[in-house]
Image 1 (cartoon, helix red, strand yellow):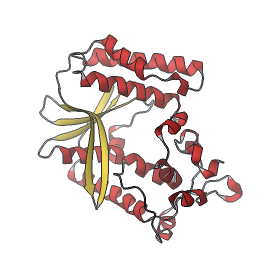
Image 2 (image 1 turned 60 degrees about the vertical axis):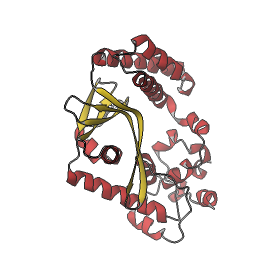
Image 3 (image 1 turned 90 degrees about the horizontal axis):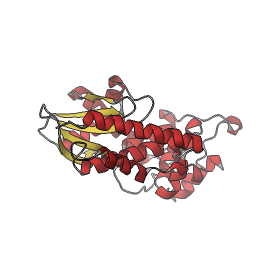
Length: 280
C-alpha cells in the first residue's frame, strides 16, 4: 500500500517541468486515510525531507544504504570519512591520546573516492580532508575537555511523537556544562543565528537536555573547513518554538495520505532518486 502511494504521487507541474511546491492547504487536503509508516523515531532530516519533497521522505524509508551511496556525491563522501576518522579517534581517547598518523589512517580507511565525480574531484577532496584533520589535530592536541560520549544517539518524545538526534561528540567543558557537538565540512557552515532557527540543531539541543537533565546543556557546530565553531544555548522560548515546529510537521506526516514529488535541483543528490517515479 505504501509503495503504491509512492508510485502515484508524481507531483509534476504544468508540462511536467515546473515543480508544484507543497503548501499548508495541500497538506490539509491529504487528511483522509493515513499510511501505516514504519514505527521509528523521526530525525530532523526526515522532517526536512518532508518539507522539501514528501516523496523523498516516503521513499527514504525503503532505500537500502548500499543503494543510496551511489547518489551521495564527493562532498558527502568526504564528510563521512572525516566523521568516521574523528569518531574512532575520540573512542580511543581523542587527540591527546591518539597520534596524528592514526587519525589519518582512520580517514584513509573510510575514504571512498569512487563516490566522486572524477579523479580530479577525488584528489582535491582527499587532500582537503587530510588538511582539515591535520589542522584539527594540531588545534585540539592539548584539549582537556572530558569525553562524555561518542556518536551519541538520543531519543525524546514530543507531542506523542518520537524523535531522535545524534551528537558526534558530547564533552564536559571547563565550565562544567555538557556540550553536544557536531562536525561539519560544508563550505558554508551556519551562523549562530541560523543554528538557533534550525530544526536540526534545535532537536539536538532538546534531545541533549532530555538525556542530561539538570545539566547546563549547549550545542556546538564545529566547521572543519574553518577550524572553528559556534557554541549555542537555546533559551526557554526558543526551545518551545522548536518543539512546536517539530510536532506540527510530525502531525502532518502521521496523517498524510499523499506524498507528491517536488522535482528540483535537490534531485541530483537525492538518496532515493533511483526509485523516484518523477525521474523515470
